Amino acid sequence: MTDIADVLLVHGGTPLEGEIRVRGAKNLVPKAMVAALLGSGPSRLRNVPDIRDVRVVRGLLQLHGVTVQSGEEPGELVLDPTHVESANVADIDAHAGSSRIPILFCGPLLHRLGHAFIPGLGGCDIGGRPIDFHFDVLRQFGATIEKRADGQYLEAPQRLRGCKIRLPYPSVGSTEQVLLTAVLAEGVTELSNAAVEPEIEDLICVLQKMGAIISMDTDRTIRITGVDKLGGYTHRALPDRLEAASWASAALATEGNIYVRGAQQRSMMTFLNTFRRVGGAFEVDDHGIRFWHPGGPLNAIALETDVHPGFQTDWQQPLVVALTQASGLSIVHETVYESRLGFTSALNQMGAHIQLYRECLGGSACRFGQRNFLHSAVVSGPTKLQGSDLVIPDLRGGFSYLIAALAAQGTSRVHGIDLINRGYENFLEKLEGLGAHIELPSAVPAAS
Ligand code: EPZ
Image (cartoon, rainbow, N blue to C red; front, side, top):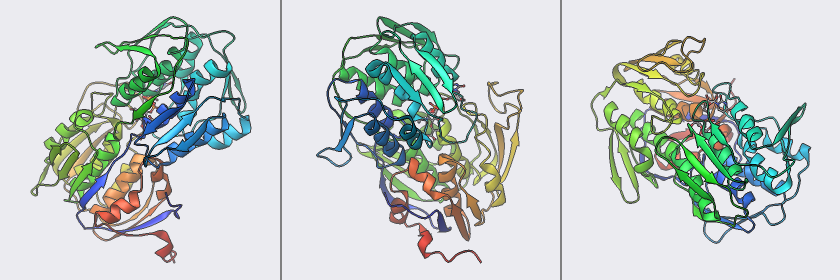
């Protein structure tokens, strides 16, 4: 990954065409790396993308005495937790600011060391993103939590015990918290109203390879029978369905044709249905999925985000750019995060017509209804987009701005592109390979 200055010049109007490859999922790989902490021997993780979130976790693991080395094949990491040790609080703090992953170190460190420190967390500004569920479940396992100015100090006075937990909402992070804690806890843990995203299933596969006993029932109930010891694992991470869908939306919005090597139909079924409803075309083969704009007008749709197997919230922002090119009124109801539509103001600046509402439009009432959150949008199209100055707000919002700039007439200056490195591997090289007319910052004369 090249350290790049932070502004990109995008000359729009060229359909993206060609092939890109997606590697392991940003929302699984860092968690599988944390899981290695639970093992009594080394683990081997394959299909690891070169993205910022992986680097942050690699640094945090090394701070705790885990050796992390590159394996034989490209994208392979060998993680050895034999000499896990406490890390210096200030070092953890310095490492953690930009990600939410440190919260998932709790369970493994409590099992290995009997204590853990959690600094202030980062992550995308798309809602309040509280971590109350995480601390509630850790207390139920028997951990004590002390909030201090610099962070949370956790202790496990004795071995953590399995328990019965019902999550108030099927949160991905809290489900992972329970999985990474319950596998070595004493007795059985029954988790209901759990998240069942494909990344959760893949993490369960990792833990099962280590020796864990985990069953998934049909009604979002996961049962974990704690064991005394876990070994290492060898695992190939599932491909990133969020990155794959982002490139699919880019193909649609730029009237292009992109083959996404590594994309898997199984984990993207809901996205593929929606893509087809909008008027996009796709073809699945054994190695990936081709996405293209078949020509002609796109269809306005009603879209509601939800937990898996619903429409994934991280697919929403890139697809909304394509919906600005659809004929008629599209309705978007964001039910997972209360403030994930703020990015649309910049699209309106480019010429889109997007109106935000506090009501739960086009679908069922959600947690944010009757509260002061602009979490629904009406997109009327098609509208011509004009190049503009854009400042990246968060990871998916950032990628959607790149798509908008590529679909627009004229030139855009996109600020803060470094943030996109958090979740999109080599995105600049991929854009150039697809024929995008972009100029890297160093070549861009400073704004007068
Ligand atoms: C994971 O975040 C992903 N991040 C997110 O992807 C993704 O959007 C999200 O799951 C939902 O699928 C990673 O895996 C690193 P949650 P996470 O706990 O675990 C509320 C991306 O762009 N909640 O499922 O943080 C919360 O506020 C990122 O790739 C509580 O109220 O998400 C939110 O409204 C963005 N209290 C909802 O649950 C808690 O303690 C879903 O959050 C925890 C969550």
